[in-house]
Structures are given as C-alpha cells and as structure tokens.
Length: 271
Image (cartoon, rainbow, N blue to C red; front, side, top):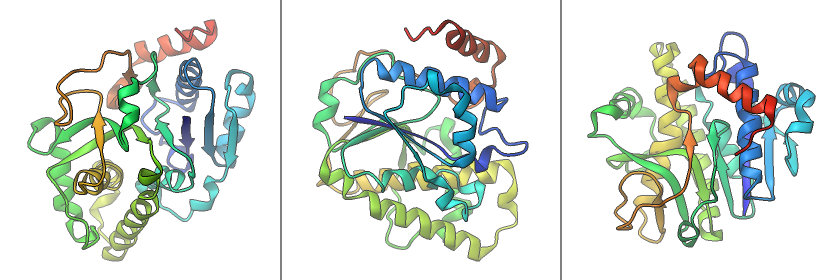
C-alpha cells in the first residue's frame, strides 16, 4: 500500500502558513510524519510544486520519500482559498490503492488490517448536528448555490486527515470527486461572493470540497464499503486499538507542541 503526501505552497506564501506558525514548523511536522510512517510503509510518494521542492531540498536527507513528483504548479490557476482541491488533484492522479495522510498526521502504528478490507476509510465522522461542527451548516448555508446539482448532501462529513482509497473500485471514484470539487470552485467564482475572503470563508469552502462531498459520494452509494478508525462507526462494533496523532486546528500553533516536534527532528526520534 502506498502512502501519499502532498504540499501545495500557494496557500503558504506571505502571511499564510497553512495553520502553522511558520514554514519551518510545517517542514518539521512533515519530517516527523514521513519518518514515522516509513516505519510501517515502504512506499511514500510526495507531491509538491517548485517552491515546495525548494523548501524541502535542504532536508532531503531527513525525508525518506520513495518518489517526489513536482507537479502541483499545474493547479496554480486555483485561488488559495480552495486549497483542499489540491489534494483531490493528487488523488485523481493515483492508479494504485493509496492512503493519503496530512503532513500533521503521525502513524505511530500501522493501520489495522481490518480497515484494508474496505473500499475506503477515513479518520472519523463529523456530524452536522454536533455543535462542535457547526462550521458545516454555516458552510452549506454560505455555499449552497455552488454545490453541483447532482450531489445529495447528507448529514455528516469525513475528517480526511487520513484518506484511504483501498480498492480499484474506490480509485474509480476519484475523477468524479475531483470534477465535483472543480465545478464547486467555478460556481463559487461565478457567484462572486465578497464575504468569502475572510479566514472563516476560506475554511468553509475547503471543508465542503474535501470532507462533505466525499461523505455524500461514499455513504450515499451502497456499492461502497467504508469505515472510520476514531469515534463511532455504523459499520463495526469494536474500537480499533492503535496509536495515531493528528494535530488539529490550533494545536499546530501551540509553541509547546511545535518545540516537541522540533526536538524530534533534532534527535531523529521517530518512536
């Protein structure tokens, strides 16, 4: 199984650091993430653009990628506020089963084999009715007119810190998934919403593209099997027992956590 990682730098230029305090912190997280994953998976493919490759070049001795594809300048036409479409672009380029992990995800253990029996698996389900995830309702209210007509939005989304496309049948959905994201972007640009330039607007668009659409496409199609490994899933009765970390939201900007990540890089501590 290939692990896939990606970094499109357009959202990271200027004052934007893609959730981190600095590019240095982001690269440190990437270094730890790939080395932890490498303990369990031999093939790790990385997709980036020319600036991303420049950023990682001084650290290539610490980045055991088996393949680096400098291709993401192909989507520089895309406004940075739609950054999650860069991930969908990478997904639809895959021809073999893969697991995409974010650069702030740490696979301390290998994924349980039971997950590999599904077409898809993800980190967890985020239900719109849960007050913690009110951003989805806000996003759907804001962008409802941009959503392609033939997507039936359901009542939840997948957290895609991990996006596993395990079977050829699952891979066959990736082109359609990207096309829906692309159409959403075009529809939104045509509507010319002025309020989406805010930070909240940027965030709302990306979670719809990445997390709402895939939940609707997978859960809404009974031909697909799927699971999540955190929280409750209607597809199983037991919890998975393995070590996993994902630096969500503000945790990436926590100086204590950032320093711990930096220490791991300095000591080459991947355990």
